[in-house]
Image (tube, rainbow, N blue to C red; front, side, top):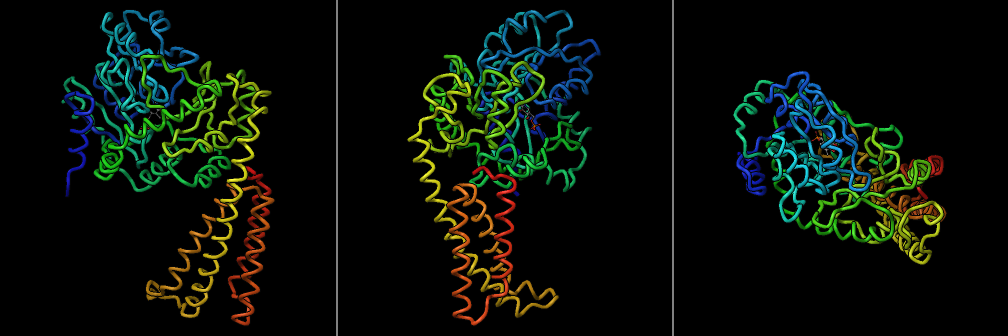
Length: 470
Ligand SMILES: Cc1ncc(COP(=O)(O)O)c(C=O)c1O
């Protein structure tokens, strides 16, 4: 079997121009193992920004260090030398610089401070592989870089530590700590990864709904397994080669919204990874109002001065301008007060709405068509149905089932895309037509047609009930 892990180790080290890569089950486990290798004493301080995924300060504490939380800059969302300087003392052992949302702004100054005070600098490039400051890649300013395989790409899990420093002790610790990964853990990670990288999926509705309805929160715990799997490494390798092209497209998306609403500041010398698109509001009330209306946006990490005033969305390289416009509700003015938010470019909105309605109607018709075929197949299959393993050869039943599921996805997509008042009549009349044709040709209503009709009405009611976006 090809050793993709070895290939990935080499790729990451080569890409950053550093000597060693150690692969891990996640970025947080990489950070934890690294900090453990420092043998931190209880008064050893590790600085980290206050705007961060809770798994990182937790890793610092578990490794025995004292977390020093530093407020981020309100525009770049990164650490600043000014705030860091105030907190440096004889106990400062390490600083974790997070390239928030892919933004390397501020890294150079922090790197200079660390050098001057002989403090270990760890760069968290989870969002920022390929980002640069002054032409130099993020991850190459400090002593160590930690990376996650589930932020800029879709994966089951995985992370890495990349460095020029000796990694023998870290590798031994990793071996000692590692436990086998259970299937349940893998499933959980897959779901978490789909959730985080949902921008990559054509249809985000299931993930959005699951999140909205279950108020899904990701676990901030460390993984009990420490090893990255060969499959995860392979998944990185198949996506990482597109990373730079993706960044170019993500940058176009960022530039598109930059003049239209207040967003993350990227310093002139910085080339961000633009992994998320951000909208900054005047206050929490306006932000929350926007969030309530726009289910696609996510609430940022809590507990920072900026947590209450921004929303963000994973920046898909596949976003069209229309999608971004409708997502951001962008306006021509800079700033994003509610009044100007409502005062959007009406023509742009109407034409996007019409296009979406047209697409939705076509999808509704397609759905009716393929579900009808599925129902005929299911009817043929059900005549051969017995409870036995030979049903694996009951092709009409199997294919019919698969087509039915595909139909369900198209159905959801159509409702998500178009206005309810447009899509629902098309879908319902499609069903009535098919039912009439079925009576005409088969002399009966195909059994599942009845169930389909009832399901259609029920789902319609549920969609109206949960107030699906439209
Ligand atoms: C900036 C940053 N670093 C690290 C992590 C942790 O990554 P992982 O899930 O691979 O442990 C996260 C998770 O949200 C993150 O946003």
